[in-house]
Length: 284
Image (tube, rainbow, N blue to C red; front, side):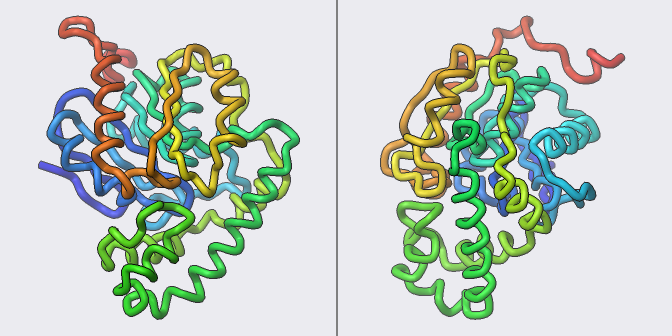
């Protein structure tokens, strides 16, 4: 039976595919693609620590390494060893970090965060962007059910994360907004960005096959600023552009995102009898 709670969505059978959402999101960011993926794989979509409905994140400082430690511990607790990792934005950065730790059978990174050049002012720009966005969301939340009824309002409200926000159902748009305000680590992420702390490091240690898939119209992590270092430093990565999509491409073109994930996962799934060790086998 599927397991569906605020902290975790888990359903299906077959190759394990872990879906990792972005900053201020929840597992519900993956809702447009869940049905088709569950028909093919075991899908595990956690809500990350410190995000609405997810486990608490106790540390005073939030680093990618600390978030990865927490995620690895959670995956251990629910019996997930290695898996195909699919991440968007911060979730993409986590997928790459876990690949350095040997937890990835393959990685699909959809506009992964943390790829700017060291010393670049981009981290400070992102800190300002997120601080401003959170304030606007807080102001809009009380009237969101009324405002989100209008397609034009949804397009405007979601323009930074989607190309076609007007196509999102009003109830989904309200839920996405309210879930984002339930993130308890926003201040810690913004503080880390203001400090300019490097996020993705030692990319040469990634050994799993990595697909970098970048939305053509990403307003948060624009392709020209955020993809070059990842393309240069992740060994053997492949790169493609997702046409017509914004930063959270699952909502703009679910068909394209499903096809992208399926093609990559199936290409990197061993033949029967040549499966990777499970967590239980490797720790017995």
